[in-house]
Image 1 (spheres, rainbow, N blue to C red):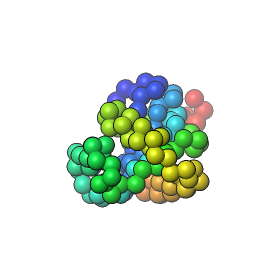
Image 2 (image 1 turned 30 degrees about the horizontal axis):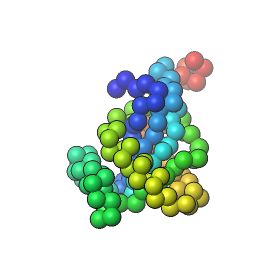
Image 3 (image 1 turned 60 degrees about the horizontal axis):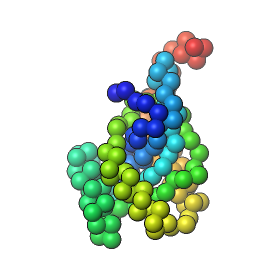
Length: 141
């Protein structure tokens, strides 16, 4: 997958999807500097990516009928993350959800930050293998 700055990507873990904006990609180290923008919780675990995407698209069409929880991550810290688990996002759904959040803000930045921290911690515990360097030479390059 080729990623360029400003591209919207996402990570899925458990019942959550984290959307980020790619700031910079360090190809030699296979890392991405990314800015978290939106966290969705309440997706069905074990469902296919297509089923999850359908649920997100349904939230765009009928937000008042959705069981998904949306968190605006504006102001949360950037992350440096291995590029491999990221997937390219459907921009239309992402931007529609961001607009919805901005029009009806929940005003709880601390809760959003806490949810992001929980997502990162859980992802890291579950996928420790992708955070290991393959060799000491990667540290020195």
